[in-house]
Amino acid sequence: MDNFLNPKLYAKDVEQLPTRNGYGDGLVLAAEKDVNVVGLCADLTGSVCMLAFAKKFPERFIQVGVAEQNMASVAAGLAVEGKIPFFASYAVFSPGRSWDQIRVNGCYNNANIKVVGAHAGISVGPDGATHQALEDIAIMRVLPNMIVIVPCDALETKKATLAAAAHKGPVYLRLTREKTPIMTTEQTPFVIGKASVYREGTDITIVGCGPLLYEALIAAEQLKGKVSVEVINCPTIKPMDTETILASVKKTKVVVTVEEHQITGGLGGAICELLSEQYPIPVIRVGMPDSFGESGNPDELLTKYGMKAGDIVRAVQKALSLKH
Amino acid sequence: MKQYSLQQLEIKANEIRQSIITMLLEAKSGHSAGPLGMVEIFTALYFSILRHDPKNPLLPERDRLVLSHGHICPVLYATLAHAGYFPIEELLTLRKLNTRLQGHPHRGSVPGIENTSGPLGQGLSQAIGMALAARFDKKKHTIYCLTSDGEQNEGQIWEAVMLAGKYKIDNLTAFLDRNNIQIDGNTEDIMPLESLRAKYEAFNWHVIEIDGHNFQQIIDACNTAKAIVEKPVMIIAHTIPGKGVDFMEYKYEWHGKPPNKEEAALALAQLQKAHG
Image 1 (cartoon, each protein chain N blue to C red):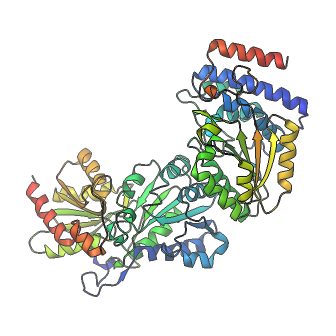
Image 2: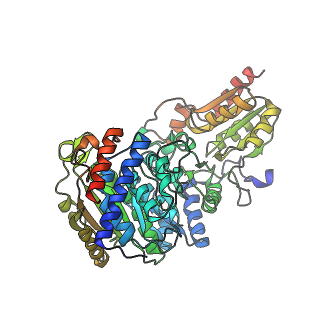
Image 3: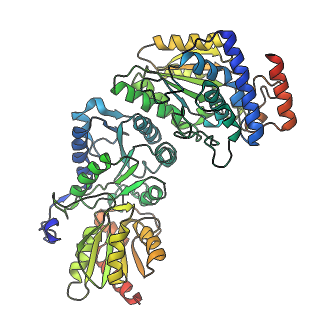
């Protein structure tokens, strides 16, 4: 297991990159592999890291202007004609304001669209609550046919982008703005629908997704010697890797979930739905507590709203007190 | 493809109108005025203008027809059935459980349906996507998109109109069903739209205005559209909602309801009388 994690994972100088960079790299690779890959953007080409794609494949890049609803439907039209459209904006705008188009033109048609929501989570920071997507996993996860992927670092995002291009059907890919630690390596496998145990333990299971997985790993490190924590990276929220999750919780019998999203409707919600039906045990959810964010720097915000390693440690202690 | 004379198109249109009345009566719900007002345009497209093959509905070089205002699907279904895409008897399953003829059209349900629609204002965008795909692949087919006047209220329409103008999408020919009604009343009372011609021209579209019940004008407009380069074409078709049934014509009250048994009998009698 260790061989597919970054050897510098717990070091102070762990490499850091934004997950959106992985999307930019992955999209160019996907487009080199398949001439049908096309890109659309709504006036945020630099922010969503699509400049390299637009420069290398200008004839396959469509600039729609600030028009996210149109972008989603145009993408669906391209998809039904055999193209593989990746369309990106900030997650608050797409899928935030194009949900109906994604639902009807994308998912109901089972069109091969790739929705890319960048700058998700509260760690967008100073732009404030309007720009902090904390509901996007919920509104995408509820759609039939939709795959929902929340990669943990830039390397996983690159692989997820390639996997999304190869998958036939609608995919939502969630990206973040800030530089965050590289937890995986080029060799770490990524398969849609697969979760991976990144740290083995026997007392409690932490299931995380996105860059906050790092905080979960740090929390586990801090608890070393006191609590044996199993940490699972669950980048595919839908379909959930029930096999990996259930195998872990049958051993530990208590769960903490960690995500940069509302605690309702996202990863935590999905885990609760799974466990309440198949293996009822206590679950404590770390995430946004039914609240909007605000301006601030990313670290201040994650601290104020309770999503740092210390908060995860406290959640673990609370969860253990509920363990039967 | 068989060439239909104008007189043969008139007869076909009358048959399609009768099918619309019959299927709406059987379904006991659905829209009457819009479908009846668009019969000539659908008939002209499927029996004269479109390159298509009902026996090979996925023919790669077929022209695509994207219906944006899906609620007028009774006319789409009836025309597809009369063109040979599926049995005419199946029209009686409209809106019933397990039917292929959903209340709003769904791509993949019956052959010949290119897009799912219902939520207004999305078809033009999808048509642009299909037109861009054809351009990428250097294909020569035309994308036809049918829109309503009521759905011009949707912001997404204007997002799409800007994009088509920007990319000079000349393999796209759109129709705007200018029947002047929407659910709550007359369009100019609900949300004034005029001047539609000036609006589209301002966005770098070529605009043609026609009588949407005149086959020669519909066919001529589509031929003109083929010759327009570097611009998308909008054919504003002036139509009469409820056309062919005197008590439905021009009445917004018939936008969203089906005829009852007596009304259907009266409507069918009028239509049968019109074409013997």
